Length: 105
Image 1: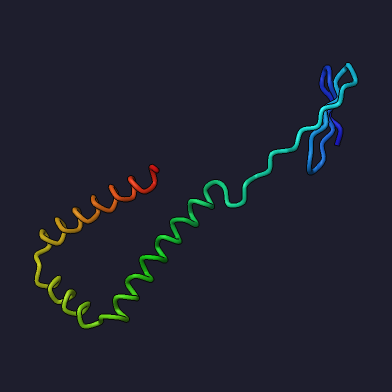
Image 2: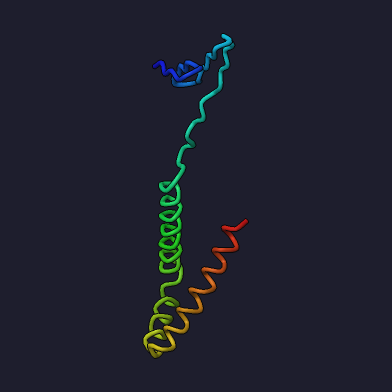
């Protein structure tokens, strides 16, 4: 493909860009390549990987210590909704703070 502008002709291929200016000097620059997994798909893959890790940990707890898990579920049934909301809010805040610390470095 040949593109022309007022003072230069630009020819490009898949691997480089060649510029020929009015003084007949030729410059070759490598074209920037898109990084694999860049952009929003990469972030989505990280989110999905994190969710899969949560499922693995939950499954591991059920597999290794099912009795402890059942007792914990019974104790959760005995708690009031307000106490559960407060506990959930604290866990949420701690998780977000930890995520911020991990991602900011």
